[in-house]
Image 1 (cartoon, rainbow, N blue to C red):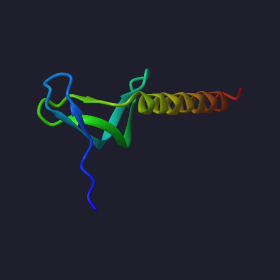
Image 2 (tube, helix red, strand yellow):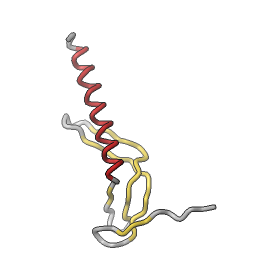
Image 3 (cartoon, one colour):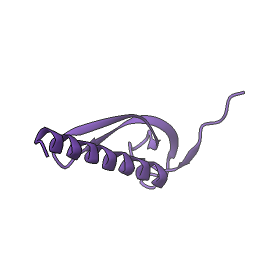
Image 4 (tube, rainbow, N blue to C red):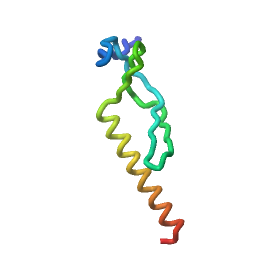
Length: 81
């Protein structure tokens, strides 16, 4: 049984946006990039607009906070603090 793909109208061009999994690149304050694979998002194939749901954005923010804490801890450990 094949499920129909989820769609919603694009806020830019009004074409149907499809729910998909895409790589999502986040640039950290230090300038480094982190690529998160298979992030659920909405993508408009007509104009290229994409967006992620609030819950997904919150999860990404939590992950970035955790990564930042780990890097801070590693920096303190390397400095002998």
